[in-house]
Image (cartoon, rainbow, N blue to C red; front, top):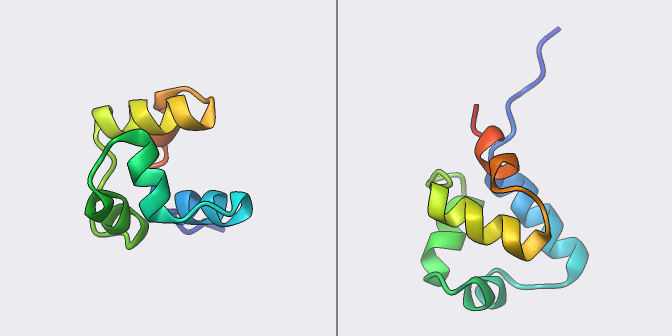
Length: 71
């Protein structure tokens, strides 16, 4: 049985909701345009190396975690 691949945006959305942080506020805190975060959450944009570094720093995980979600 195969598992459905999960886009990093789904994980990001769940994590932000659990923390009570809006995507716009998160984007401000990691210094990226809000539409970048919105597009990732919508599954319309992949996570670049730069964005993975920013996500990793904010969440306290390795950037590779976010990049690995895409494979």
